[in-house]
Each structure stands twice: as structure tokens, then as C-alpha cells.
Length: 429
Image (cartoon, helix red, strand yellow):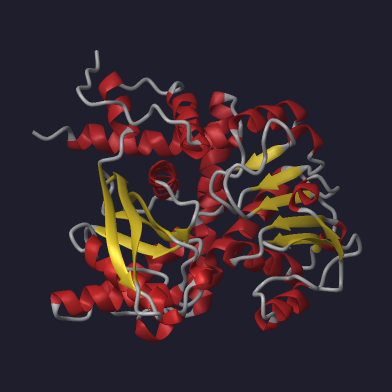
């Protein structure tokens, strides 16, 4: 019997958090765990909401709201990104922190899960304003972050420069340089080679493993790939697939989708993006313009949703024509869509496996920072591929054992690792 004396945070209408809780309930039902342990792993360990002032270039002061959630710390210090977006809310951060717990456990990293964010449109602010915002937000987080407590990283709307500001603010506060307090930093201040490309590259490692499992023996040039999202994850996944000879037929960003059935030149598109005054693919002439919704339903062998949560739903899942879905984003597939894909025989490589390349190389960066001993890019990629392939094998073995899809298998594997560590440690006091 489990008693709780505070209002349940799990009464939520937020679809992202509902998805995370639904997935957890489904996976944990296969494990014979004590009720109290099941409840413990469902709740965030701690949450922080802050409201803080930022001086704008105009001289005015604006108040921003930010969050940091530690979901679980049984396996080690918590780890997770910081996102800047107008869509950030506490329930979304709770969901992402929970997924980080399972992701880290799945690839056997000594981390728990965390996530954070600020409600802001980073494109609407100057570099100086973003610096001021980041430094003030970091100062509010000082009570929760540290190289042995909680290690932030970049996420949607943030980047290596954001992490440099966070690291410098923390270091100035404690009085000495602490590179290991964040990951995803620029290389010249302790970042790791390969970190920027890690998540997208890991997506393609998992795509290759899934194609092998499906016994797809076609040449890469005969396998069509669609990537939704052209940010850090999507653009690097598309680039890696293109470099390996796959035919990337469509990509999308905030300006819409771009389709060419004969294949896109991803290098040319990335070059166009860096020179675009709108920081988007708007106006790119080497493809047919489609909507983001249409892009998800175009014919292809592999679909990589690498944009936002909740893109594949019960409404559009029956029209998706991909044979394989590899999730670059966190939570892009709603539970009802998962059921439809399962019934249709479409394999879905879940987010906590497919996009774990980022946190894996973040772990490498953290280790290198603590030891002050750095690896070259080839070494980083060798270690990354070995960890992801091992995790993929673990998930497929669990899927066969329980006769479940890969998402449920990944969550069963990860949740059980956290559960067994909790049982070994016991509850304090």
C-alpha cells in the first residue's frame, strides 16, 4: 500500500508528460517490483522554479521564468539539457527529466536524469541579452548544479556558447575554473571532440543497426531517408546519412519541408542555412516546398523525427509510409501512434536509445574534464558506436524475452537497472 500526502503532480493535461507517464506504466507492468519502488521512480526527486530579472539592451528589465528538475539520482549525479523556448513548462521539463533517467540507465552511464529550461524565444534577443539571461539563470541554479551533483548540457535553443557562459558563471562564483560543471562546451575551454555531432551521429548508428536487424540488404543509395528538423540533431543526422551514401529525400526546419525524390544535397543545404539572414532554409531552390505535416507522410524507407515532441499521433500514424522510424527528438511519437505502428509492423527505434549519442559523448566530456586528459575525435566515435550497439543489442534481447516493441523493451531495460540499483542501496533512512 502506497500513501501520499501531497497533491499528485501526475494529474496533468500536458501531452508530453502524459506520454512519459503512460510509457512508464506500460513498461513497469512487466517487472515484478514493490509498489513503493514503482511509485518512487515515477516522481521527480526535486524541482526548482525561478523567476529572475534580466537587463535588456534597451535598459529595461524583463522577468523570465526558468526550471530545473532532477528526476532520479540513484545511479549518480543528474544529467540533462537546458532548453530555451517559449513552449517550456514545468510538466514538459518533468517528462524530459524522466526520459533522461531511462536514457542514461539504458546506455549504462553513471547518471540520473535531469532537465531544465527558460521560457524565452532566443531568436528575439541579442547575444548580450542571452548572455545576461544565461548568467543570471545559472546563478539561480547554483544551489542545484555542480560536477558531482547535476551537470547541464545544451538542448533546443541553447548551444556551446550558452554552456561557456554557464561554466564561467559557476566558476566565477566558486572562485576557480570548473570545466566539468557543464558539457557541450567549446573545445577551447574543455569541450570534447565530436560532441556537437554526437546525437545526430548516434541516430545513424542506431538506424544502421535497425536496418541490419530488418535484413535490409539494399545499397545505401537505394534507401530513402526523411529527416524532420534541421537543428543540431537533424542536420547532423542528415549529414551523416548523406556522407554514408543514403538518399536523403526530404528535410524540414521552422520554414517548412523541402523534398526532392532524387535526393537532396545536404552539404549545400547546411551551407545555405549558415548564410541565410533568416537562419532558416526559407528560399532554398533545390527542392519542392512541402509542409511539415506533409513531410511526415511522404514515401520513404526511414523517417527520422528530430524536431519537437508529439509529432506522430493517432491522427497521422496510419498515413506514415516509412518502414522504419528512428527518433532523433525526445517524445516525438504519441502512445496511440506507437500502437498503430506496432499493428502495421513499422519498427520504431525509441528516443532513449536512438538519441542517446549526445548524453554518451557528454559523459565522455565530463570524464575528460575530471581527469584533464582528452581524446581525439576517432577515439570518441569508436567508444560511442560501441556503447550504442551494445545498448541496441540489450534492447532487442529484452524485446524478444518479453515479446514487446523496442520502446517498451528499452524502458523495461532502463527502469529495471534503476530499480535494482535502488533495491541494492535501499531507502534512507
